[in-house]
Image (cartoon, rainbow, N blue to C red; front, top):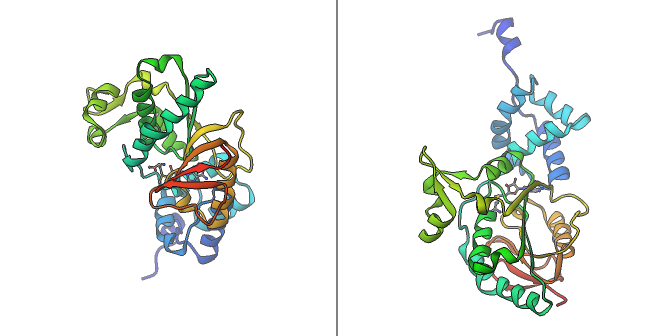
Length: 288
Ligand SMILES: C[S@@+](CC[C@H](N)C(=O)[O-])C[C@H]1O[C@@H](n2cnc3c(N)ncnc32)[C@H](O)[C@@H]1O
């Protein structure tokens, strides 16, 4: 059946050709490090469908050309919001929080006491919707206890996804999402809302500073090095060369002997000589 000219005019062509997918994949890799394999093609098409329509493009091709020739910060931001996978949950890979509680924080505290300092700098480098950095803030709070107020405990949380950051700053979660946390923490750090959801209490929320930051930035703008960096479950989306360069920048951003956390299933062995492995997913920068 031949469709009417009117139908042809209104029906957008959101098929992705090989060439347009390759073009988008290259742009996403160069700008954000994220490696889109051919197997992700259907996922990319479905995730971008609504955004392309909202931006007023009639075809995927038009969108891909515009992204290549005149990308704006807004469209790039929408693109990465669609492409990035923000999957996360409270108390993911809890062993890492135990290492932070039992090893990392006590060592930093002991070292700082020698120098009469009370300064703690942590960075959660792919913070997604906030579950991970809020748990880090809870652990710091638990360990410092009554001394908490006397410390400069800075917790920076960054991500490339504006959407994810907005949710993180809102700090409201379905109550079921909180259940992996120890029950005492659920009551200490969350308050129930009338709609049945749970919100992080204000005193903890203000301990985490959220910023949009692209890990692909060639130089990191931090004034002082961090004592520990959590960079979990993000490098899995990057290729080896991208990972190698990022690990090097991460090492530069840490104090000598600083801790570097990656996802449990990730390894940085073979990509760097600047860290030694402590336990699965936990590394320490050389040079203490
Ligand atoms: C799967 S989530 C991991 C969240 C959390 N770290 C965890 O382990 O549960 C990956 C996050 O990395 C972010 N991301 C991807 N590429 C990035 C980049 N180039 N710069 C900063 N964040 C990026 C995504 O937006 C996403 O929120």
